[in-house]
Image 1 (tube, one colour):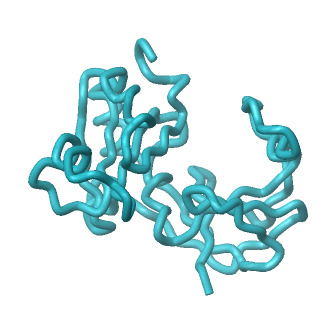
Image 2 (cartoon, helix red, strand yellow):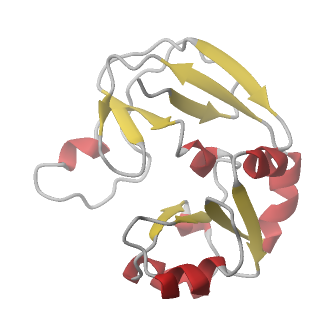
Length: 177
């Protein structure tokens, strides 16, 4: 049974109420409802995607079974990390000083989107438990994630054309994206 989480800088959430996304995304036909009122959650394996201040632009990269040796070598080099997390250098201090609350959510009433560990609920959800997370860089390292700090994320724009899995979050906040 998967474990589901929601991360927030608010440590006082008693119920998660479905709400539309702040910035609607273009969705394939039939999936427009994903911009509507929902509660979003992430599964345990993918939770490092949210170990960042909310507005921090980031790209996380991981291997897939079909990833080519050339792509792995190009992006991972000798790294044995299960994921790479790339942020811009001006986010290094905010990352180091931020803290988050990780809310564990019940699996019901969520449905999987079968996309990078994302789950959604169309109804209100009460958290099962919560935990404060300090030292986000240490939490990333403990999750097997190598943090890479870059002047700009722009050189990674081509990642989505590789055989690796890439997830970009809050890229609208990245410099020169």
